[in-house]
Length: 435
Image (cartoon, rainbow, N blue to C red):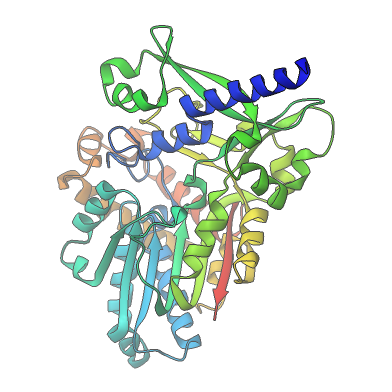
């Protein structure tokens, strides 16, 4: 009787902690998207080389956009050249990919009757979770924004604001899966897996989740908050144990201590919701990641990252001021796609995006084009209202003066070689189709 009562008391204590404090996943999600202090919600991100981060649609602009436009044209032909065709981007960042695709389609329409027909029914759609970033994207597009439809919604949450399904389109999700906040699941020796919760403390006193936003939104108090972790049974998070059993059954196997696993139960819902956006579609999920085998054995530092590259920041160092991203478990994404009735037509290095596009990327000429566009973007950034303005006005060269002359060209050449697969990369593309 005592043991039963003791077990019940422990369960009650666990539930009390879970009801009072945020899970590790919810804390990270707030640090990214909380309206008053989240990294993405504020819209103050510095995109581009030397900024907070530099994605391939920016680093390889306009070439990356030309590849996406060519994939869209091929999908349009595959669908029988419908009168209406969309390119739909999830999480459009600073709008660079959107701009490059729209410009490419307009340019190609002046060169070919087939592209002119494609252009007549072409529309760009952006599904963006951050209203602040959506405004930045509109500003970047300028007059071209008339060719773009924005919808502020969260497709990973089954948001009612998601656009209604249309007939045909190409969906692009570049570094979207890695932005999903993940649960941190610890696997101690001789014990079942447990999920991490965060107990913030201000002045030594615990800070409940309901008061965290107000404190973190105040720069004077934010730096005084300290964070402590507590591990609870998986069942305190509704649906988490079922997700793990369905998609990562190995978590309950073995007896020795193993590295934490980062679980994103939103992946199946996100993939299924995106799969329903079009009756006939191709979906390009581009991200850095690996298969489940890697995620089960790799140490934590290789699976979760905070802050700019090489900053060595941790999740608790600058919450709300740093990006937090995760290596994607592509096994989960692939299994979720099959469960949603989608076809997996390709998965591998991101250079496979070039397949079927008829595009060629001669190294020297392509690097010259990228450098020219980067110079133009830099100069435009000097007069733009975006957060990059003050940072660029205070710097005479790219990367704060570290990348001069040949070094900048070498950097572009490395990015290009990595993209096409001549250098090792963790970036992969998962290509799905419906219809």
